Length: 154
Image 1: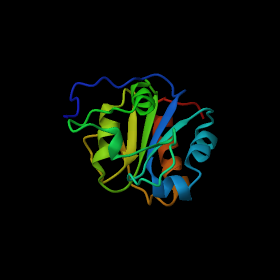
Image 2: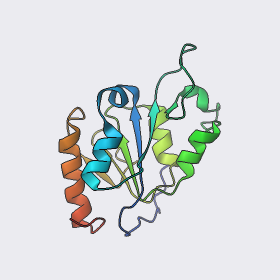
Image 3: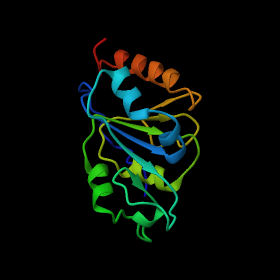
């Protein structure tokens, strides 16, 4: 899949947020809660990639390589529903290349996409250089950009 070079970026204020992350950050950072607190929003939605293991319990907050077919199309309905949601902001909170997370960001119908720098610059409207273990630093920088772009009020 190619990034849409002609994608139109929305100029409206942020009201809905989706987050894509890895199991590591999902388990070590209260990512959803921190995003909601910093951006003064409620009901952010989060999906987390975790490698498939037979012992994994079924979860509506996780996806794995088993949720894609051999063509890279999502076959898990709940995950596809998340991707199809037209979030005002999608945060890709992962710091290493991951074909499944990158594919999810690419396929997302979000109107504005932000992520950590040095992963895949073709995916995001804005990349933020930050230590991913420091969510506060990332969110302060994100908020600064959103204020400059009039995507949120102070």
